[in-house]
Amino acid sequence: MAQFKLQSTFQPQGDQPQAIVQLTEGLKRGDKFQTLLGVTGSGKTFTMANVIANYGKPTLIMSHNKTLAAQLYGELKGFFPENAVEFFISYYDYYQPEAYIPQSDTFIEKDTSVNDDIDRLRLRATSSLLEREDVVIVASVSCIYGLGSPIDYKKMLVFLEKGKHYERDRLLHDLIDIHYVRNDIEFGRGHFRVRGDVVEVHPAYEEEAVRIEFFGDEIERITIVNLVDGHVIAHKDKHAIYPARHFVTEPENLMRAVKEIEAELEERLIFLKSNGKLLEAQRLEMRTRYDIEMMREIGFCSGIENYSRHIAGRKAGDPPYTLFDYFPKEFLTIIDESHQSIPQVRGMFHGDRSRKETLVEYGFRLPSALDNRPLYFDEFEQRLHQVIFTSATPADYELERSGGVVVEQIIRPTGLIDPKITVKPIATQIDDLLEQIKQRTARGERVLVTTLTKRMSEDLTDYLQNLGIKARYLHSEIDAIDRVEILRDLRLAEFDVLIGINLLREGLDLPEVSLVAILDADKEGF
Image 1: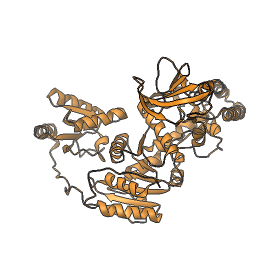
Image 2 (image 1 turned 180 degrees about the vertical axis):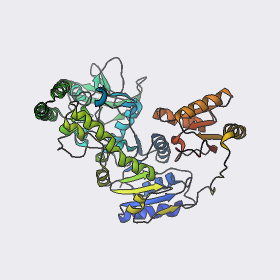
Image 3 (image 1 turned 30 degrees about the vertical axis):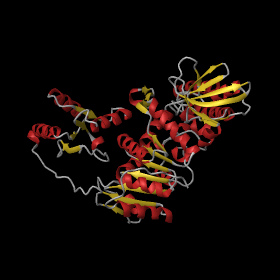
Image 4 (image 1 turned 180 degrees about the horizontal axis):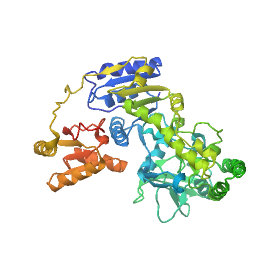
């Protein structure tokens, strides 16, 4: 049983104590599904933190949007400072998947922008799961998408031990095999550098470097050092360096996969040519042989995830490896705002499938690319060990899975009642909003404003700023890390008014906000 040390100046109040007891007893009884029906502001996150500490198993918390996930991550990091609280969301700031539009004969090349910080956090999440038990991972639904094999990921780590025989050149080759790059000048994440008998590695998932000092072919010293000034932070007797990417495999596995890819290519070319699809056959052969050549030479190619079935040795139709496969057999899953998150998980597969079927049909990808996919919903359910749904409005699915029994958390710890709701005429809504903003800012309080569209949120922000009001906007085009900073700045009074769309609808914990203004509340879309 993992030791989670919950640190908080608060004690459970209101309905929290009985909710914590009921949920903990349910987990210890072995109940697979439970539902926590908690009203807004009832402290569901603190209840969950207490349940995690009582249960003592690795925990996955799923959230339906990145902003809410980031807030949960920050809160749980504060509750469990001595434990591994990690963050796992999509690392793309911008993502345009490859696609083909037959009607106009248009191929759209894959175009992405990867957020380096989030990539580091994702790698740290999987490495924490493999080396300790006191782990809480806050994730978006990207946790149901394919990752590399956890078996290969763990097997290929580089393990260092002080006093052990380990040739320096062998260490360099081992680092290259797990996708670290030698760069003696720019010492970035996922790089290593060599200075005589000293090798320094910047792990892809850490903010410090590892310095390995050799005496001949023996490891004399292992230290953790500051990246900027080289100051020694800690001395280590043993240390593991995990791969710089999730998609890694041993060289012999890669060669086996290449042979399987070539066999599938030959089979597919015969099919396309026999059906008179000569252009598609030529296109597929050119693209696939280029990828094969890259894999043979450098062990990697752009879009290598499309060959993940062969690399992992899976059969056609088998589910991909996901974050769930990095967890031990027994773990807890908490699905936050489940009335939103569950439908999101259900819908992920279909859009991905239709796009890839078109790519396969027109010779851009092999049929095995279809197995690089998110989990089906029934596959997702099979991977769950014990689940707690949390929602103020649980849907039929959650109630059915919980056998109609819910744990209620109605009384707020603060004793606050539901907010007063005022309806104003739409014709004067902006004037009314300005008046309310002036009243709130004069008292040092903050305001949230919800609009229907991104354009409206940006235009309203410009309008308020021209009137001298400190305002910012927040919507899906803002990077995940920047969203967290915007919410923090709002709480620190760097500005007074935050304007957004559906990102501000639920789940955010902002005690400084005393007014939520919903513009065009009668329009379809809210």
